[in-house]
Image (cartoon, rainbow, N blue to C red; front, side, top):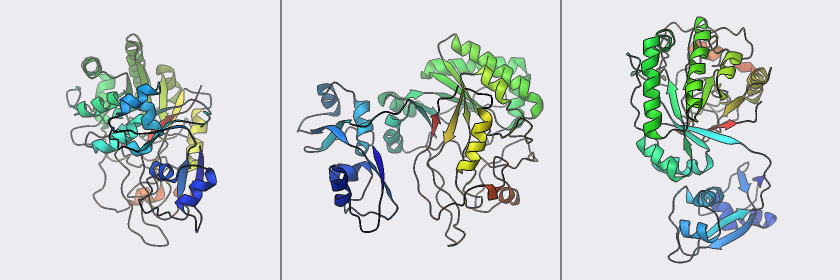
Length: 403
């Protein structure tokens, strides 16, 4: 596989001829319009088929997979144009296998809201190892808030993607709540009730693991949070299940702020099977225009997490900048796709005035605080200057090979 950057004057046919691939397949694999229109700077994924099949009347995706000793998930992965579906037309070319050389192993997790377009979800699932419906929140009594995840889980099973239960302190009002988290961590009876409902849900829904995302916890709860995770881990492990924890991206152990202080990297890492560093959304819809995940900022968070080595993964979006371009005055771009996971409210290193995390702003205003700091407490001038315009793709959490 290679990535081709379109240059001025190039056509789809010319690029296909350059690499010796079929132009129709190249266009289909990159969502190129029927007319073959390309934009200068556009990137095209070029794959080199080893074996190709021309669909005959009456054939199905499963029958073709069986004929070649493969499975439908592999056919979906090798044929982006199928969009995770099974509709075929006579004469359609399907890539059975490619010459691509594997460079390593990775696991990918994606978050999705229950209201996601089912077709969009189906198109992404073949490329995800795990999928976590967002989110099971916590009610005022310490039990689970319901989540309409049935259709998502059915689609995940069809596409060979393993479902992960996502637990957060989201409330009925739609915000992360400090008090709900504190209640669970300090009241043993409440914690018992929550854990019981977690395992009932896991068993009923067929989840393979649990991802805990408790944000905006005060520092004095750090030990209690790690102990809660350790308790969950022991109980999950006894059932053959795994536990992840999502961590705010820190750059030092002394970093202040409600988002960071209770996330003790060493203690949390020791209590779980893996951690997910939320290294995304420095740039966000209502903030100043900048990259969503500037590499220098991401690097700082990852380097701290790996010193000493932790069992870490990182959350890496493929969503472009959202916000007006300084030079053009263009309006903000669209919010990230629903598959990009929970949209995170950026916060400075100062504690918020309320214990409840506020929802998204209804208009594209830039809070004074956000103009000075990004979510991770790094000043915006330290980030790379974004390019103009915006694009939409999916985001997943890429599991790196941490220690």
